[in-house]
Image 1: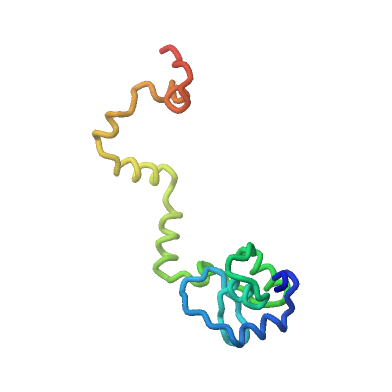
Image 2 (image 1 turned 30 degrees about the horizontal axis):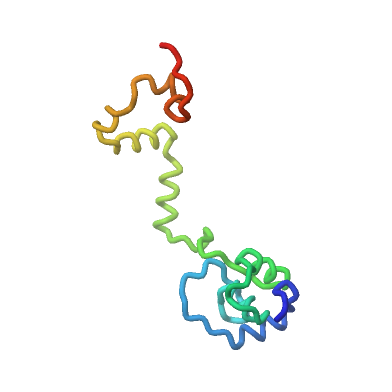
Length: 135
């Protein structure tokens, strides 16, 4: 067993040729030849270390980038669908006042009645238990 940090490009390519992965949902992937493979499991396989090796995904991605491989993250902007991009731009166009107003409309009236009348003056009392300020 070697340290994953000592891997060469040839060792990654060799491991990728025989690599089989049936799970879905890997966030970090690497392009090796024509295949897109999960980054961390491939690095661990190439190094011959067990799956519980302390090498994390970010370290595996850095090793692969250093060796000249293209890596991808599952939620890159390029992979977002048109509908997701439209929803994101709609959310960004709202002012902070509109966002706060929308959130406060969702709070039931009975919950607003539970808010202390002196909350703004005594916020430290309600959060941390400090002495109340006089009114």
